[in-house]
Length: 395
Ligand code: FAD
Ligand code: DHB
Image (tube, rainbow, N blue to C red; front, side, top):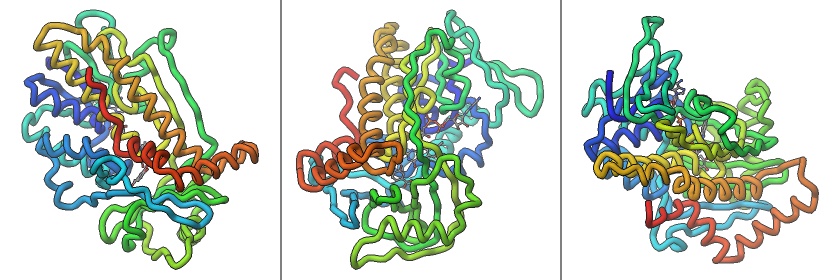
C-alpha cells in the first residue's frame, strides 16, 4: 500500500488528523492494533473544550453530540464540605464545555472515515514497526492474524499511538528529551446507573482524597475517587466505593443517589512530555508525546490540538512545497503542551491528598482554594484553561 501520510493509532489524535487532512485533499491510512469494537468500547475522557466540539461539527461528525451531549456553563469546586460555582461561561466571554465521552467521539469519526475511505483504517494490526524515518522513504510494517508482513509506504509517518505505542520508541533514546512526574495516587473510575448527581461537574478536595462527580446521560453517571495507583479493584466492593463518594462529596442539604455500578477501572496519574516530537519524517502527536493527569480534563483536547497544528503544517508542505511549518511543529505544539501540563499539574496538586507533602504544602493548597473561591481573577485563570487556551496566531 502507498499513501501520503501513514498514521499509527486510531485514537482521537489519529482520527482527527485523518479527517483534517482529507478535507484539504491529503490522503492517509490509519493502522490500529485494536479491533473496532475495542476502540469504540474503551471508556476514557469525558470533557470536550468548546473548539473541539465545534471542530467535530465542522468535520460533519457532531450530529449525535449536538443532539445528546450535556453542555456545561460552569464547574463546581468543593473543599471543607463547601461548594462554589465557577462560572466558566461568564468568565470566558461565553465559552462552554461539552460532556461527551471519548468513545462516542471515536464512533462517529470512525463511521464517517470508513464511509469516505473504506480502506482508510486497518484494525487489528500486530508487530507494527516504523522504518526509515530518518531517510526519504519511510514505511510502516505490520502483521494481521499471523499472516505475512504488510507494508505501507508514505511520505510522513505519524505516531499517534498513545503512551505505550511504538511511535515514541522509534526515536533513538539518545536523542529523546523527556520529562516526567509520577504522582503517588491514581483514580478509581466507575460508571453507574444513577440519576445526575449535580447540575455540573464537582471537583472535590477532601482530607481523605479527591473525588469527581461527572455525568454521561440522565441515567448514567461517571464518578472518580482518588486511590492508591497499585490498588486492586477487588479491594473496592460497591459498598466501599459509594461510602467513599458519599464521604468526599458530602455537603449540607445534598445527598448522592446510588445505583448499579457496571464499569470500573484504576488508572495511575502521571505528567510526561517527550519534547522530541519529530525525528526525520516521523512526527509524534497526542499521548505518544505527552501525558497529563486527568484532573483538568486536558488529555483528549491536547491530542486534538497537536493534530490541528500538524495538519496545517502537512497541508502547507504539500501545497506550498515548504516544510517551514513542519519544522516549527514541535516548538509550536510544545508551547501549548507545557501550558496544559502546568494547568493539569496545578489542578491535580491543589485537589488531591498527597501524604508525601509537608503540612506547609498542604496548607498552601487550602490557601489556593480559598483564593480561587474569593478571587474573580483566579477563577478566570482556571476557566480560561479549562475551556482551552487560544492557539497562537502563527499556528
Ligand atoms: P490514544 O487514545 O491512546 O490512542 C492511541 C491508539 O493507538 C489506540 O487506539 C491504540 O490501540 C493504538 N496503538 C497503540 N499501539 C499501537 C500499535 N503498536 N500499532 C497500531 N496502533 C497502536 N483524559 C481525560 O481528559 N479525562 C479522563 O478521564 C481520562 N481517562 C483516561 C483513562 C485511561 C485508562 C487512559 C489510558 C487515558 C485517559 N485519559 C483521560 C486521557 C485521554 O483519554 C487521552 O489523552 C487520549 O486518548 C489521547 O488520545 P491519543 O489519540 O493521543 O491516544
Ligand atoms: C471526566 C474526566 C475528567 O478527567 C475530568 O476532569 C472531568 C470529567 C469524565 O470522564 O467525565
